Length: 124
Image (cartoon, rainbow, N blue to C red; front, side, top):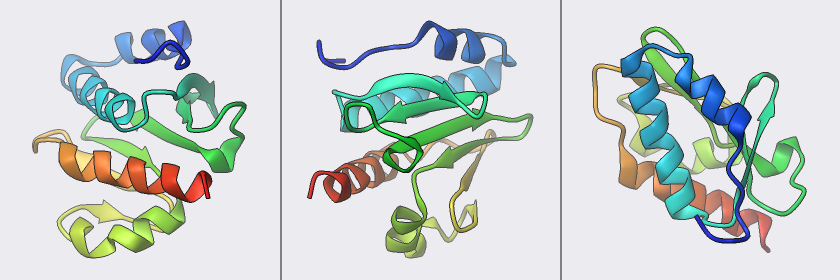
């Protein structure tokens, strides 16, 4: 995390209240986001963790994550999912969301690429 980025105690709390497997997967996803975009700021949005990719980023400038009993949700934006749809074939996904099952490893490099792609869209 850079000095410009900001972690959120609320996000820490959200993650800490989840079962161990879900917590571990969300922490991995969180680290991927920080790796790809070290200047992000964390916040809670719609009662789930969000990462503002640009200063003061509103909903369409955020990536969100959430924990569930059998998967974690990753919400990078419809344009990212469309751009990476061929590489997401083994996951359940829709227009704005991707489900990473808890019984499979997080595709870290793919997540990092998707976050960097979204960041590049916002910085144009």
